[in-house]
Length: 136
Image 1 (tube, rainbow, N blue to C red):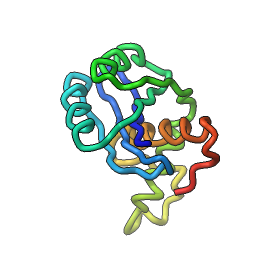
Image 2 (spheres, rainbow, N blue to C red):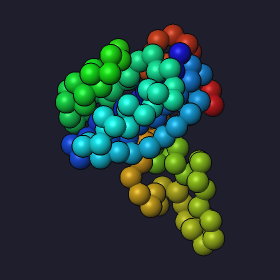
Image 3 (cartoon, helix red, strand yellow):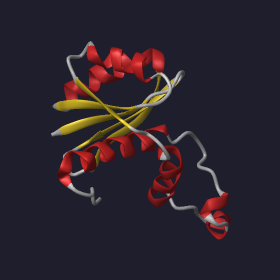
């Protein structure tokens, strides 16, 4: 089962396509206006079974846009995903040079991490559905 994780927002939306083991197939951040075009491209590339939307800001509007593609919609609590997304970002992109000397808790990623938050939302859904802890 391939899942599309969505971190909704008022101006931008993070997305993550994950397999049934929670492995990331594709990550990205899209402006809300172009979300439909991106989802259309994703549904052509992947056999997406379900869209999982974080229960946060603008979730209803984003879910209504996703419903036009015939995707099943599920909602997941997105508490603490932004904070955890920062940690996940630094695990994938460890600081280099002098930045590696600064504790990670004192650093911020160079840009938004909505895509990593969407990845965590998709993984949380998989864990809640009884597949057990997602190990990646």
